[in-house]
Structures are given as C-alpha cells and as structure tokens.
Image (cartoon, rainbow, N blue to C red; front, side, top):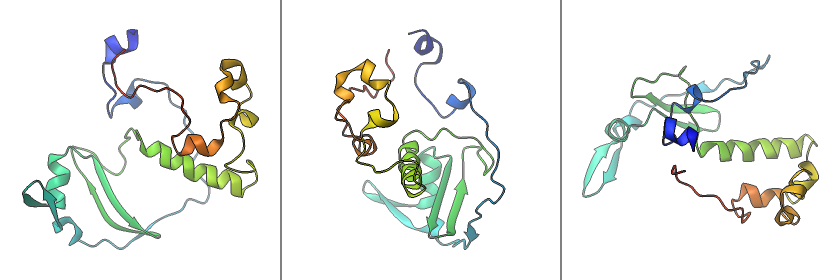
Length: 156
C-alpha cells in the first residue's frame, strides 16, 4: 500500500524507483545491420476514420521508441518524447517475449530440459507456497495460462 501511495501507477520511469542489477556487456556483442528505409515513417495508418503517417502516430501516442527489425537488419528506428537510443525504458509486457526467447536459449544450451518441465523442478520453493504449482509447466507460464491469480491494475 505504501508503494502505491507514494508512486501510484506504473510508468516508464519505474527504473528510477526500484533497485536494478547491472551486468557486463558481452565481449562479442551482436550488432544489427542498418538498412533504414526512410519511407516507412510516411506509411499511412488507419486511425478511426482517417489515415495518419506512422511518424505522426508515434508522436501522438506518446511512444518513446519504435523499431522495425527484419532478420538481422533495422529497417526503421525512431525515438520520441525526448528519448534516444541510449535511454533506459521500462519494458512492461515486452519482458514476457524476452523471457520466452531466453527460455528457448536455456533449452538449447541444456540448462532446461523442456518447456514441458514442471516449474517446481527449477523453483522447488513454490511447493511451500501452494500445491497449485504442482502440475504447472514452464510453458503454462510462457503462454500466460497458469491460472495464477494476478490483478492487472495499479490499485492497491
């Protein structure tokens, strides 16, 4: 309740409010190829009964960063609302997709056997929380069909 009273709803500045873990950059970082298509920003997007350019939509929607990536190439990259490529931004639901990618990598590297493994095989302490975790598989979490109650709002 105290956190909600102080900060209210989640926002893109959450990284300034909570502890963070810093980690070292890879010794062999991947770099996207830049094949920027300047015409993409002029694409017309339907907004209600009218059409607006993608760039205009980015501006009016308070989007801070918008990228279009195909294969290993950045086709379009635009930052708005005072943000740049170096800005820190809260990922919100994007984190779920990144977690799924990391799961695939962990399976490929042999750290996890399968997405069908029981969650409690890797987090046995959940057995003490509730027996509802007993049949829960990793893919249930990734697909957001675990049945774990979660209220997606910012009220206390």
